[in-house]
Image (cartoon, rainbow, N blue to C red; front, top):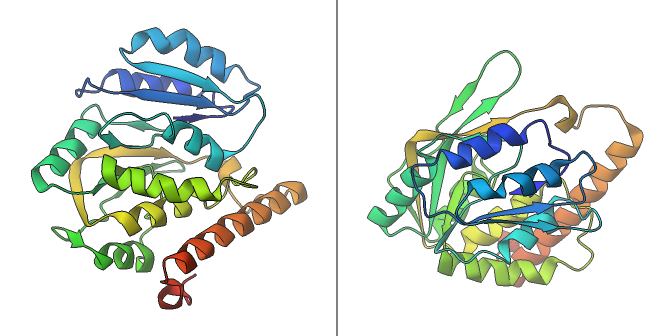
Length: 254
């Protein structure tokens, strides 16, 4: 769970984790040098969980390296991300895990809801029993579904995760500041190593949208940082595709 200046959203996020029907959870919080008391709130609430810990960054590194810090500490057989300003239904992890076990899948894509504005928008973006091999990247890469590139609604099996993490560790040098499109990096790396992708329906991830997430807010310095982040993320995706010999296939979409 990456944490950065989300103190007002943490209670709902932590409540949803505490209510999970699947109890054998390892929860890793990584605070990216918050200044609003977020880390202290998490630390005071660790006692609510049987297996949870907090890692603190002394300096802000942004989202890509914060996720990497958490992933390096994971010991479970199945791994999934949760953003600290979002929350999940009480049976979300149990539902995705059950689906993965019954199908022997490497990755499971869960339903989600976009929350914010005037209405909640449900998203069910998996419409096939399973995708195999190269079908996985083609489905994820060529899809036009909103938020399909996000990593937070994908559960990943350990062997697939380890293979992907090995590639991700080659990208960490100079990766400070990647806060935009980092989801794409994780998703394409893990999907490359996945052999079977399935979907899970009925239980949802709640993605909470905020105005300050918008790239349309005209703040010159913020826009410069966003473009620099986008550039760094894109460089890493292209380099990864080149290293696997698949850049030509996807070059137009890249």
